[in-house]
Length: 224
Image (cartoon, rainbow, N blue to C red):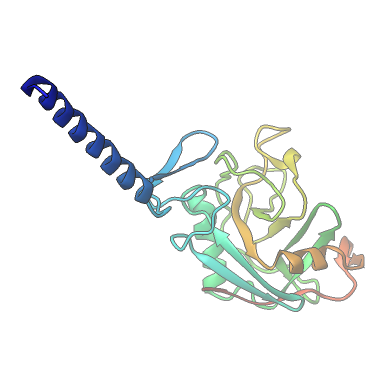
């Protein structure tokens, strides 16, 4: 074999070794790319978001979670302060000062939602803080298992009452028929409890329909 051919074989051997080495590296390190509807959320090797935010459907240790202990069982919700900062801050203010403790789910509609946070067992409406700005245009949808703030016909009127969607209620989303309702959290554990609450028998109490015959009490609400 002449020197020219020998040199070519050496070069080919080096290239082959380089290709094999690259394949081994790629096999053991493949970046994960997580997408949402509009942009790249994360590029990492362990699903840890580079900007501290997670896609809508993921549980994240970065996001605050709240445990709602109810007379029907425990419900754990995850809050999305990155999407609804005003709403989350408002909700946590009621959690932290114990305002939700002893309140009831006073409005329960099968196939729609369960609503609570504003009344005690006697039907007395509780005092609230000032109403907050509506954050319904945040990209989060009123899908089954999500939480949104209840309000009057005025957009910026939400205070302490919230509801858990028990169905995909697209008509509550921003822009569908009006300003919509601000989603700020999602049930990450205890959706079976929510569905059980949804199915309770209801009546009319103090002039309000859809009130559970047997009170469904929020015993306590606390960060976890």
